[in-house]
Image (cartoon, rainbow, N blue to C red; front, top):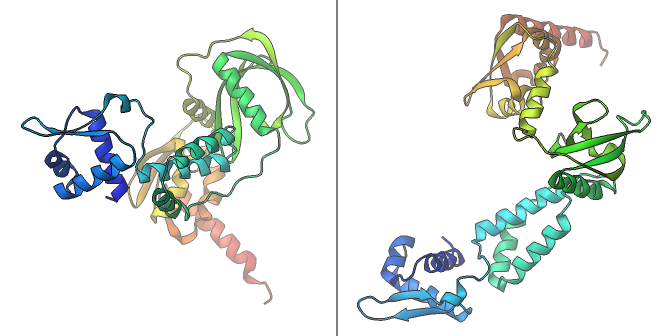
Length: 323
């Protein structure tokens, strides 16, 4: 464990307990007693009011006035916060300015050695930001506030670029970032059911005087799972799909926005899904063909045969090409 991590560990130990001896600290951190004394001296030099009592019941403790001071973070915890902020900025998180200010406050509390260590740990990690339209941040903030307040919104929304925007009232239940886009799940008064709206297609947003209550059992994850189920080609019958392959390819298949809802079993070398047969026949042969020889469909046999047919058709398509 790094020097500063050990020092912060000592600080947490002293803040959580009334009194500890150097031997007790050394045993828990697996360092020498001499090193404990050196770290405590450094903490005192940094302004931490550590008091040492001698005698039979002696030990180190922190003055009560210091126990309510701001949180201290280990180096790896700081790294996690900085890296998470990069993710947030990359997906258009609406409070990146506030997040940056919070990070500045944390960094201002670090000394030069800690700051250099943090920069070293975070310099190799980056997130490529997606280009969002200018009004997305304002829309996300207003939608989140409406969710918190339970207030109905009046929006002008277009389904795609070719459609004309239409007005409707919505009760926003939740925001989610999915497939590189922000969505709001809301009860649509016009259709009288839950709908998903892409935030970047909301052309205008206004507050109304109406309020609503989000159902206690509402879950964004469950909503998308149900939607995926409804989008199946048919209600049945279903079949087990067994696929072997390398870990990277299996990860990609399992994380597919539609496939992951049907995953029933996963090992290092094999995955199993339970999917309705019409969906299997219509979508899976072409999709699984894109993985080439990195996977092998074990069952059902009909799916294996269809992938073979597609592969033969592609090979024949290029057979007569002139080089």
